[in-house]
Length: 480
Image (cartoon, rainbow, N blue to C red):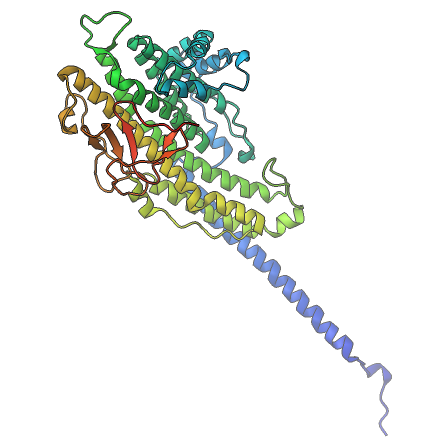
């Protein structure tokens, strides 16, 4: 019988055998997960960094500090200095309370009787004489430097002066129409020019989509004013013009040029989309720290933020690419051309709440809507300019042109194009319609022969039918 040394005996009950394998498998799984996490993060970050480097090489801002470059314009030559002073000087009569707004007063002028709330309008204008003079002074400045800054996180940056600029735009609407009502069209045109310059100077801020929308909304106020006063605007040649009464022909031509000079608005819109891209990049980068965003996310634990970092980096790259493609598409001239190049939204895979929010923020519905509004306001500016050219023709010839071609070259260099139409189609003109109109075919791309539908009491619903500009200032208006 062979003797066996007990030390050589190794006893492995089955449960310990499987435990050993489970431990080894778990260690391998952890290594695979950590390796995959690191690999995905490294590759995603490398791709994102490469994208950001390409943006910066093209001179496009990416981070907050990239937007905070100022021109250092002297205060006396800086339109924004006067706008800020005008905002400080602005007075809304306390006696009005919340019962009357600037929009109510503007709407009362648009109303058929034209005399409702006349005393309130004059009270507002007289109370704001200093602010109006500052706005006229600002219009003489060639540039504006608002000295507004982005801070990290960019999405939490406040927009404290947005409402103030809108109020100043509405104040000028009241002042223009009140001057016209009193027969002082020289003053009306000067104030209208100041309103358009406010819109232009605000667009020159080149900061955010909200800033751009505020600028174009102020320009939209000017188009409403022109539709209201244009048909009866008293225009004379400079020679022999009664002082303080009629508008000069050169003054109206300056308004037309201001309306048709679209470069600053195109640049503002392009820059706004770039800033949207920067905000998304900054937000996803900030979320990696686990910190909270004041109004958007309550924050997550740092281990969780660390764990989802590959997803945040990947989504940042996808969204950056998407916004870059949108900005590129928007450089095209017409809405159909833009939509033909408009990219599908990326797939966002971060947890449900964040994923849904970001998806909504960059979906077709969100930015298509912004683009459509941009095209509508562009259409309105072009039609407002054309309506003033028609008025100048009428003053010179005692009649309106039969075709818009008659305006070339003395009143317009060319017939403005319709941004909603394919190709080079121009805005449409119906001089013998009842009432006579200019119109764009609107977002649906269908020419409905100037058919329209009102949206509330304020505006034509150009998403359904056509976007119409009434040459006799008699747009139908619903009662509230």
